[in-house]
Image 1 (tube, helix red, strand yellow):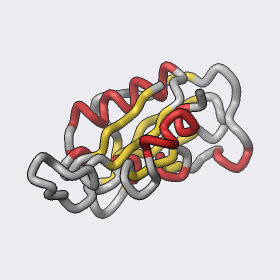
Image 2: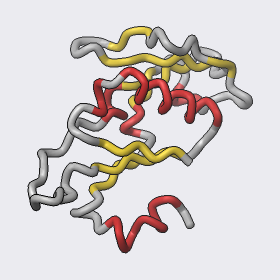
Image 3: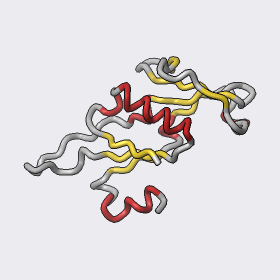
Image 4: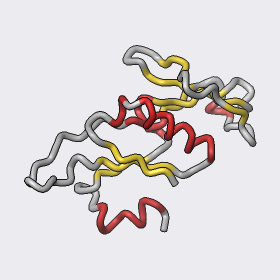
Length: 127
């Protein structure tokens, strides 16, 4: 299980993206949790950060046997330099072949405060 804590600049951090991609490759379940809504010791909260899953995508080969990682550069999907992609153990579905699927379409993101993480965390992680 990979839990990505989403703060103000998480989406832009290279190594956060790298760990997300490595977790996907390992077959881990993945969720994101916005933590900026948790009040600090002065009771202040920061605005929610951007969802890092919106900036990564998986590009499936036409035959459905390979996946390549893409990242959004603000204008278009480009090759993600830190991972060359990999061969899938089983072919992907027909509707994904030849397409880039944004990770935000595959992985859920919760807000610790608004979604009552204290009460619901076990459900989120499937315990």
